[in-house]
Picture: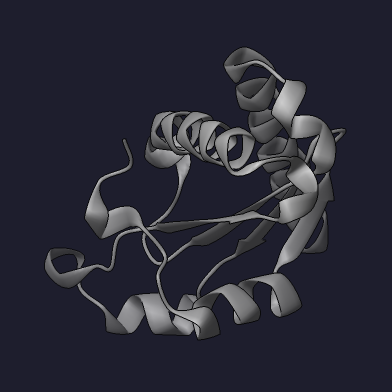
Length: 127
């Protein structure tokens, strides 16, 4: 289970992350990552740092309600494992594609980590 403090809840946060974040497309997942401005990070001291947030988008095209809930549980579990790799104030949205219903937790986790690595490589190339 993903702890409540790490869950993205606001529609505006989802929209901003999808619209303005970096994107990585994997076979059964699309990962969007949005980082805070470096100037905003310096204004926030370490004691009051906002934790990273993770949101899931699982459309009806993934399958039945049972399939969608199964994918959501697996993705929440996998996302919990990558929380340590995320920076404070980082926002991550994971969109499940229709093939995700047949994917195992290990496959979902591998694709999430691969997507995050490619986003980080692209971000490093720009900076």
